[in-house]
Image (cartoon, rainbow, N blue to C red; front, side, top):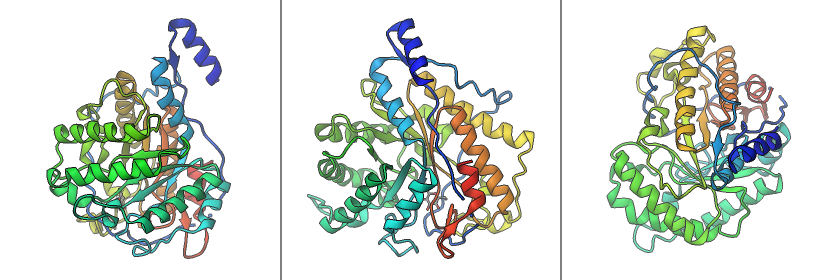
Length: 378
Ligand code: BGC
């Protein structure tokens, strides 16, 4: 399919074209509890309403040869899972998850093709120049990368929960750049299945203009040591689809994947989540998969697809999930619909998350949360 499409496009324009992100297979089992400590993710803005979800997708569209690499790398991410609540806790283990070798076996054997690893680099680096990253922490992340690579899982190193930079961006500018410089240097020899994600869910006082500047500068720094590394970056306002048009990326830099997160309807996905204010009142909210509910998702994803095609940037749905307080039928129905809706549009994805409050894996009982797993990997 891919070869045919690419060939076709080459004939048309000495250019490439982009098939949907690849898929893989499943396995299976029940639910898990546990909240994840953190700051409150805002209710993400839904893009403007429109007609019915058209699912334009499979139609090839033209990209240039230099744009092709990012699409191929996005396809490699395929279907993934976030190793949440581990390395982005202030210290690993404090939020109930310490990564184990066996997790990587499970994830690989289930049929996932990638892992996104949220990492709180800022908790493991000096406060003053040269902002040295703790070598022991680097060693721990190295182990994670190694485990993933041994199982043919692509791995995203995602800088997560840099809360201080959201509050005072300029006060943390130099530190952010210096830490990226070290990460880039440290992983420069890794294969191209290692990806860098600049910053999870920019929010707070980082406005679009300053975020765009941070992105451009960080990319420049990373490129000095990693000329071909694929970098993942998302829009402000918690990586909302509705903020994609504010994201202005360096036009001559093509090896980028753009990430968005999706938790709509928020009152469904975050019911009973203690970090989402007022969420007790949402308990009992169902997602029935009605035409109206599906159309709402379709409109949002079509808006992301439209932006993607206009800007020639592939999309990675880096987080989506429904919290364990929601009823299981609704959760699995929603999860399946979101995953398929992403795939139909050629987005790669990573479920939030592996074994905590949204878990596809039930850590307490050491078994897959089957309805979620089969929803993700049918
Ligand atoms: C946060 C998590 C949270 C999730 C859902 C993530 O970006 O880092 O702590 O559980 O969003 O709200």
